[in-house]
Length: 229
Image 1 (cartoon, rainbow, N blue to C red):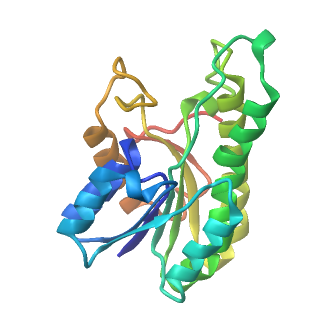
Image 2: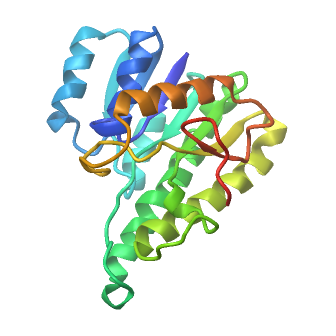
């Protein structure tokens, strides 16, 4: 199977690449600065026939178009929109407009752009899946602490967009859903997070592998629970 993963240079994205290659799948891994993605490059040296590394900046449509050109007419089985930014965790009084706009562009508009550009490839696969990595911080029902406006709002918007995609793409037999990876020990999650990358990714892959029409349009959690919207 062919997977495309955004934000694959570190953390959860890199974890997806490693585990997929280990089980024999093929991967197109994207990063904003591929030349600086040392661990990803080492994986490519070990798996030159099954790993392609390409530049993709979620804020630049031209790089997204270049990835689509690279895929050509190849069927794409699974698109994992993992790339994201987390900024602006301060109080309401310190809300920064530029951080808000950048968060929307990367966390919400970016996955939509990528999904739209690669839709022909997804349509060529049988039972293709779009998996948007979200966060419980984008759950309205789960928000009991406030703050983190840019990240929360952009992830909540991604959740709504994915719900609409699931409905609109159902006639084309494409599944779309969001999944919360847990609080993971990465550069974004920090050293106090509850689970490691291997645990998060292995459990998410189990959910992705088993996803079907009933999964489409849902808000999943890494451990198999459903998250309230």
